Length: 395
Image (tube, rainbow, N blue to C red; front, top):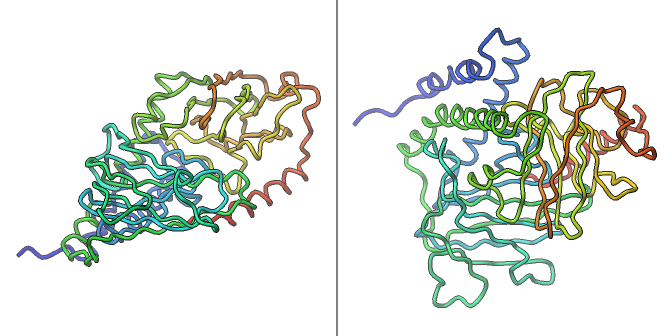
C-alpha cells in the first residue's frame, strides 16, 4: 500500500500557488504590495477549503462559513452571511434552528460542489432554492424541516425534496441593518446515518486537492471579471445572465459592470427604485472579482444604508478619493474592477445608468440638496460600519 503524503509533501504541493496566480493576474513586474495581496487572497481561500471541505463531509454536515470579510473572493454581497455544507443525495437531513429577524434566509441546492476541483469553468445549475419564511415557524421563530429525496412515511411536518443532482447547500442570510437585525441560527443533522470519521485516505485526498482548488477558484473569478470587461464594456452597467448560470439566486436580478477611472475621475450611478422590492444593494470589487474590504471601507450600500435623493432616486459615486457625499462607493487603489447591483423580488428591474465625470465636478451632476459628508463625519460613519459588521453572526 502506497504511504500517504506527510506534512512536508502536502506543503510542497501548495508552495507554487501564489506565484502561479500572480503570473496570471500581474504577469509584468508586480509590486511587493500586489504580491502580498495575492498571497493573502490565496491563504484566505485555503482556509475556506479546510473549513468547508477537509473538516466536514456529507455524513457529518455542518454549515461552515464560506465567504465573509476575511475571505471575499467571488464578489460576495456584504449583506449576506454565506455558509455551506456538502450533502449526499441518498441522505435524509433535518435542518433546524431559529429564523431571527434578518431580511431573509434562503438555502440553495447546488448541482455542483464549489469545494471540489471539478466545478471550475463549468455551468453551475441550481436545483432548488428554499426560503425559511415558507416554513411553519414557532413562537420564537423555531423551525424544523426534513430534506430528502422522498418524504419520510412518518413525517407530517415541513419537507423539502432533495434533488438527485444536488451536491452542496449554500445558505444566504441577508441583513441590511447590521446592528439591529438578529441573524438566523441554523443546524443540520443527517438522520439516516450516524456519521463516521473520514478515513486517513479521504482526508489526505481532500487536503491534496487544495492547491488545485485554490488556483482554480481564484483563476475562475479572474476570468469572470475579464468576461464582464469584454462583454459588458467599461464604465457601463448591463443586466447579467452569467450569474444566473453559475449559481445566483433565481429571485434576484444582477447588474454587472466594470469601473476603470483615474484619481481625478468618478463614476455616478443613478437609478429609480422599484415600487415593491424585498432588498437591493450596490457594491464595488477589484479585478479578481473580490469585493473591496467592506468592513473598513464603504464599498457597498444597501437599501437601509443608502441615502435616497429628494426625487426618489438612488445615486452613488464610485471613486478612490472621498467625494464628501453620502453614497460614496470606495474602490480603493485598484485601477479597475467590478461593479454590481442586486434587485431582489422586485415588481420591476430598472436599468441603472452610469456616467464618468471629472472628480471636481461631481456635485454638478447631483441634486443641489445632496448632503455634505465632512472628513470627521465620514470617520465616525466608518467606525460605526466597522462595529456593525463585527456584530453580525458570521458562523
